[in-house]
Image: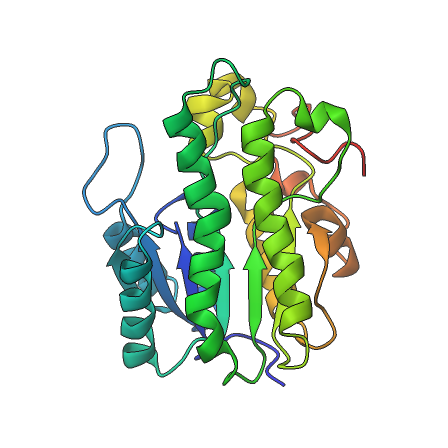
Length: 277
């Protein structure tokens, strides 16, 4: 059983920036192969980075990168991206479902096209990407599906304020749990992973409070280090879990999380879905 990700291949959705890129850079330090599919092929005025700049950073960190401009809502594009990955690297060992859309509007304020976007990218995209990778994961020595989504809670406070977003994220988590059971005998691990606090990403900057919210967040590296810990565990021994990043890191012996603060000694804001845990 491999103890690191050297020469292992990851297929990551939405890894041109933020948490997905942080995970890609973490595994690149091992010498991993990273195929990244994202829509941003050209520079965006409000978003840093493209799949191509991300690939450059991955290779500078020690990995091998395959940047793919694509939309995970399109089954054909995903199938082609997976086929390209297998042709380039010989297989897939880890599938990371990172791509996600967020809109916290209430029911009356939310346009149906925004509802559809979240369902199509979050829940459906997770299913489509995972489904395309699974035949190749079956040939891996230590196969993992990791979905970046929260623990499922039916507490009304997570349902009332932004039911559309909650459905979309919980759908991702249900995919993670369902895959774990369906492919248990095949040895494919499937887990969901979520942070206890805000993570400093473009979504937080642009949609959830700007600089004030960023000051209350932790760096994406917290998520990346926790993800690395999960996907390097034996797949038959770590599956079917809705994990929290901080708990995973504690199990790895990391007891000082202050190094992950975006602003040193800042008061952190608890993220959605987790203060009930």
